[in-house]
Image (cartoon, rainbow, N blue to C red; front, side, top):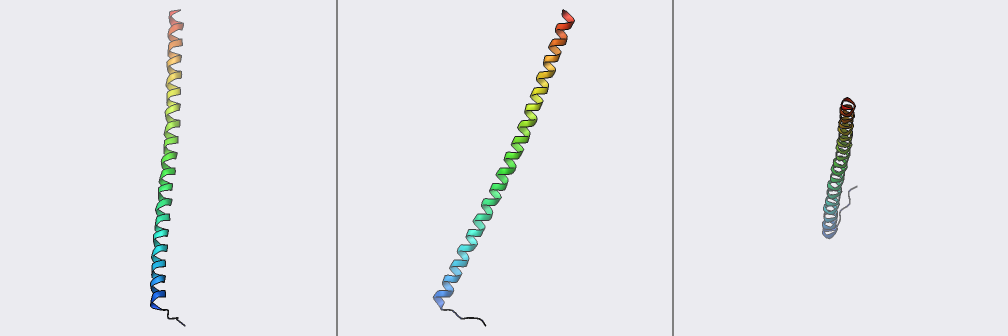
Length: 74
């Protein structure tokens, strides 16, 4: 059986529902930003690892080339 509330109670219920909706929307937006930040950090980590691996490979290749060049001239 539905209850009838006073006008002030109905106004308060509506205000509370609106505040709750804003709170939920704000939390959803914050969670979305957190997710984006985590994805960005993960991508940065992967790119850094790939760059460091490439730099190491290039350094090793250059070192091997210099050693081979010395061996030929010696």
